[in-house]
Structure formats: structure tokens, C-alpha cells
Amino acid sequence: MTTATTEPAVRGPKPLWRRLIGPVFSLVLVGAVFFWFLPQFTDLTAVWDSIRAMTPVQLTVLALAAVWNLATYQFVMVSTMPGLTVPQATVSTETTTAVANTLVGGAAISMGLTYTMNSSWGFSRNRTSVSLLVSGLWNNFVKLGMPVLALTLLAFQSRTDPGRLLAGLLGLAGLVAGVVALWLLLRSRESADRLGRGLARWVSALLRPLHRGPVSGWDRATTKFRDRTVLLLKARWHWISLATLVSHLSLFVVLLLALRFCGVSESDVGWVEVLAVFAFARLLTAIPFTPGGVGFIEVALITGLSAAGGARSAVAAGVLVFRVLTYVLPIPLGVLTYVFWQRNKSWRRPPNSAPRTPLVPETA
Image 1 (cartoon, rainbow, N blue to C red):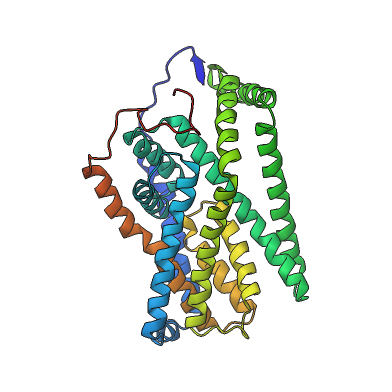
Image 2 (cartoon, rainbow, N blue to C red; image 1 turned 135 degrees about the vertical axis):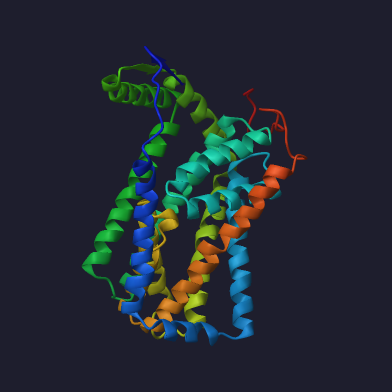
């Protein structure tokens, strides 16, 4: 894809205040949650007591569940990236997760880092693009589908309410829209060509006020992209779906175990209600107010689970343990894997020289 330009735009560095406003806003939100909301919502001493009451067996089970949850990230990446090894997927996913969890705009930065790391191992940008698109779509399909599943299960228990019903319907609408968009892209080369031309017209119209020329080549790019994606999905759609579902359910299991071990019993909050709150809280990650949704996720989980019947201190303890294992733990691991990637030269390959597979037949 190319863009015709009349004059190269020269942009100076952003003012310091513009660079700092995002991180400062995120820090204010996080500070408000942990230093104002939680102390008013529950007694932090009682939270700590609930955590200290866990037995060595419970701590071991939680640790194993957390490690398994981290390992499931690799399954999705390996299934969507032919030729990528599990060690490479581990280094990539742990590093990019740490970036996404610590930096404002971390999702975009981690995507660029994924391209850089994969390129250093010889993978073309096309392979990485297909992997990111498919894994991203499947992750969003599961995120949007889980509230629908939770609402269905709650309906059998006659515990639905208008708020949950509306959220579930919004999730279903988003899921249907995503499936339709994917179908329009993949149903034929002609539809991909039309989609590329349509996107090019929209982007060209947006660039016109900036005195930029029209973009070109998007029809060829989307057609080639469509061919690669169809080839991958025909061969591995079931493995990609299974790996994505296992990854999301593993995250839910860590939350469920943390709540149970901190004193929130099944009679207090049933597993279906935990699933419902978990599913709706995860939708908040689509709005990147803070890195990894920190602050917002905790508020949504603690508020929802307490409203469902859990004791505030036990719920807060379980949620904080869950976030330490799934949000905080990947950060130091990601630092280690980033250092390993920087220093390990044995995996390095020249650009576009990664081993070809039947799922990547054409020359990059």
C-alpha cells in the first residue's frame, strides 16, 4: 500500500505537556482507584487477612493456574503464525504483554514490537499481519461471545436483569458485526478487492484536508491478505478457536480460584455469576484509558461480585490476587524476555528468510 504525497511533512517533537498528559491522566485514575476507592469500599486490613489465610496448597494451585494461564498465550500465536516456535512465541507474547500492561498506548506499541521481533527472526510483515489480525479477531469474538454465554446460563437460573441483558445484546451485536466484516473480506477475491478500494477511498478522503495525495494499492494488498488468511483458516480454524477459548477460560479459572481461596464460596457467588461479571468487566479493556485496564477492571470486578452477594473484603482480596497473578506478574517476566531477545543472536535470520510452510507458499 502506498500513499502519494505532494510535499514531505516535517513534524517537530510534540510539546512536553502533550507527551505527559496521557501518562499523568492514567496515574491519576489508578491512584484514585487504589488510594480512594478501595479504602472506602472495604477494609484493606481485612483484605490482607483474607490473603494470609490461604493455605500452602491453595497458594501452589494458584501459582500453577497462573503459570498455565501465561503459557496459553503462546498457543494462539503459534497456531496463527506458521513456522513460529513455542520459545519464540513465549518471548514475543511475554514481552509485548509487559509493554501493554505498563505504557499508555501500550497496545499499539506492543504491536509494533511484535513486527520488530518477528522480523528479527526472519518472518515477513505479511505473516505477522495475518497472525495479528486473526488472533485479534478471535480474541474479540470470544470477548464478545462470553457475555452472551453468561447471560444464557443466567437465564436458566432466572437471575437476569435489564442492565446485563442490554450489555449482552451489545456484545451479541458486536460479535455479529465482526463476523459479517470477516465474511465480507474472505468470501471471494472480488469482495476483498472491493473492500480494499472502498477503504482506500475513505482514507484518501480523510487525508485530503491534510494535503496528502490519494492512497493506492490497497485492492492488491487486501486481496493478497485475503488469500493468506483463507489458507490459514481453512487449515487451522479449529485449533485457533480452541487455543483462544482455552486462553480466555484459563484467565477466568485464575479469578475463580482466587475468589474461592479468599473466602468467596459458591453459595455466596456462583461460578455462573462470576463468569458474567468477568465477561462484562473484560469488555472494558476495549477502552484503553489505562494500561491493561488497571483500575477500571478492579472496580468493575469488585463492584459486580459484591453486588452478586460476595463479602466485600473477600471479593477485594480475591480480585487483587487475581490481578497480581495476571497483570503484575507478566511485567517482570516481560522484562526478562525482552533482555533475552536483545542478547540472543542464535534465533536471528535475515529479513523474509524464515522457513516456508505449505500455509505460506508465495514469496514475500
